[in-house]
Amino acid sequence: MKTLRPLLFFVSLLLIVGLACSFGDGGDTPTQAPPPEQPVQVDEPTTVPEPTEVPPTEAPLPTEPPAPEAQPFFTEEFDTPLSSDWSSFTLYDDTESDLDKVNVEADNGKLVWDLDSKYVYYYLYYGAFEYEDVEVSVSADNRGKNNNSVSLICRYDPEVGWYEFNLANNGLYDILFAEILDSGKIEYNRIANGGSNEIKAGLGVNEYTAKCEGDELSLTINGAKVISIRDKQYGLRSGQVGVSVSSFGVLPILIEMDWFKVSEP
Image (tube, rainbow, N blue to C red):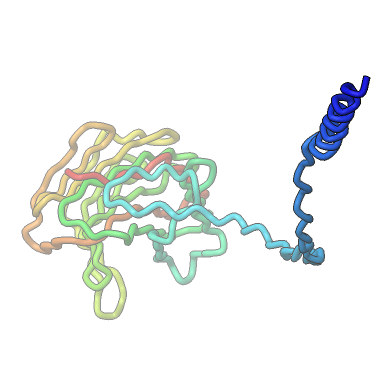
């Protein structure tokens, strides 16, 4: 039995040492502690500026459409008042004429000549262009008395005069040179005259065309060429175009023009 004590002692010693080692190395492996959090700087909230109020702007007023550009050759149908390209003057009798009873205006698609005065010669000229060779036409509806005349004008020069094709509602016509004298008065010089059954007398519509081409002056009535004559005496070369209505001793005179046309001959 003595021989077992050293062995037991040795075994006990091994157990004690083993337990000590197990206590020293045992358990879970400790994990590394997370680094301390870095402080985050928080900016102080800034004040949001109030939105700037935009002052209201006034809506632009509608503008008038631009006036159409003047054309040398055109048909005027009188749907609107006459433009500033037109000008007028009136010849009259100092003792018998009353210009307060004269009215010429575009109305409802017609150019209305209301001459309720004796011996009035009312002229309209288109001043936007001057023409050498030109053809002028008009449609004239007689709504009043028969004693009147409608005239077409070419080569109007305010310092010299003009050619005038004068058509009376009773069937007669004249081709005239209207000369402007130094005194300012007008002297009418006859180049040609005659009568034509092509003119519709009384109430009704007539279409007249006057052509000035070179020294040739031509007149057409309701599509029929009535006369063509050469002017070798007065020799007007260029000028404006126009139209006229005249009253005489019988009233009232009322002419309605549906259109006025300027074209190349």
